[in-house]
Image (cartoon, rainbow, N blue to C red):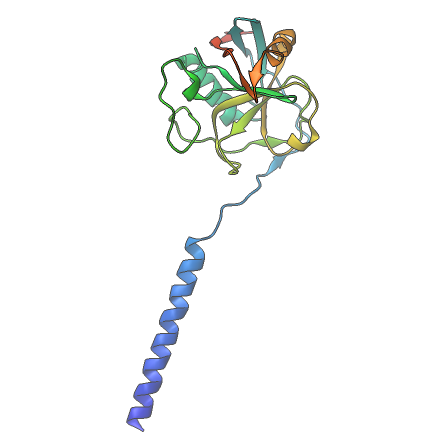
Amino acid sequence: MIKQLSLFLVLFSLAFSLSCSENKTTNSNAKPAATAEVKKGVAPIADSEVAVIDTDFGQVKIELYSNIAPKNVARFKELAKEGYYNGIAFHRINQSVIQAGNADTKPGAQPSVGKEGDSGKPNVDAEFSDIPYDTGIVGAARLGNDVNSANSQFFIMLKREKGFDNNYTVFGKVVEGMNTVMTISGVPREGEKPNPPVRIKSVTIQPK
């Protein structure tokens, strides 16, 4: 009787231990949410400051929407004021966008290991809205599939792309210099990479 009771206690203890172990493994492998909340029905309100991008092809002026994407606008302004974008190249151009903000494209930069170059600052959470991705819209690029991995890269839309809606953070729009954007989109390139590079001289934050 005592032996049977002891055996029962041993088996029960083993089963309980395995159960706890399985729960711990499941929790540690839990994946972050693949989507983010979408701000709906909020009209964009332009900030009192605009971003001015100077390039060899001309100037691009962007109004910024802090009421839609306060964290992403704050990061863009912060990097601009620090001079982060000065000398960076537009590293991706295709039929839909021109994209810049990769630190690896700066003259003399050493390529990042295992990821595209970013600012070195923490990533910024997604701030999705129902603003449609139309020509001239400025969005925050991600560094991977994680929606909360915006950092320093941004893109400017060349045309309407419904597939971008609710999937990337809108934080501004081109209000002057769309002709410059289109000129940049037509430069010679290898794949999506312009050759020779098209560089940003500076990005400044100025009063409207």
